[in-house]
Amino acid sequence: MTSTPELPHVQIRKAARAAMRAAGIDPETPLPIPLADIATAAGLERAMLVDIADEPDLPPSLRGVLAKISGRVLGALAPPERRIYVDTTQPAARVRFTEAHEIGHDALPWHRDAYRGDNEHTLHRDTESALEAEANAFAAEVLFGLERFSEQADGYRPSLDVPLALTADWGTSAHATVRRYAETSRHELALVMTGVRPITLGGAQHVPIWNTFESLSFVKRFGHIGPVLGRRLTDLVYPSLSGLLSSRAAQTEHCDVTLETNVRGKVKFSAQGFTNGRVGMVLLRRRKLDLGRRLQLVGPDGLPLS
Image (tube, helix red, strand yellow):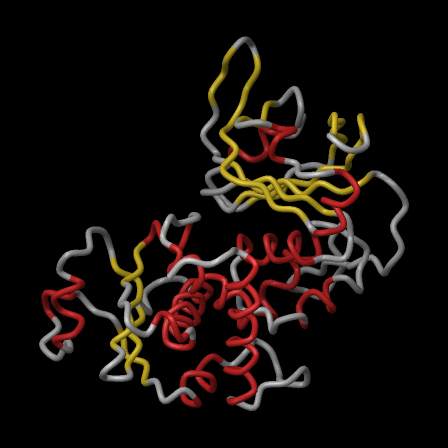
């Protein structure tokens, strides 16, 4: 199926809204969004995905296709059997994303004639498959309650602390939550996704830029950030780059970044970074006074964190 990028997005949101409505999910539904209710309303049964070679009851419609898929399978949909298979050994946030992704394959009408199995690549990085990207988009709409997450997050002063603090409530990964925040916020935000393995060239340390995302208001004011940064993020541009090179989840120190934007010329941004050990994330926002409540992070003992 070929169509413009705008049309599938509208249809995906419509399908996500319909799926949530059918499950009785509204803005008052306790978080995280109950995926089991959505699956039940759609007539889908969830089963654990075990080693394919050892699964005696795997439906014939799945066995032949899965046998051709290289890599470790995280989820699968068996349309005739109305069954979703999910690898429950993954982290909880990944399990939820996989389940929502497979529900999406069933909920999007133009996916029903195509079967897909999902491995690490399709769930971690942008995929060339339109169907996989659309199922990912459906999963994001459902997991973040359509506009509900953005409305909550935008009630606070813009900061990387906001999405990181909300991941537990929404049952989503830091990666997914930070991206959703940057893309849907009413504030002027841009997100730079990078690798975490450094290379030193010409005396400067750099990491590859994998992707960039912006809020609509950021694009309107400053243009797209990707062409400005190019393919690499260096410590000359982002002084706190070394903080992204941790093999563990870590947040970097705030710093200032000055960029030559295509719309406003030189602009100074405040940059905050975070890494989950696999992907680096740098959130950029205009260095100015922003209105809104400041989100206060607290520790396990309930005391504020500095």
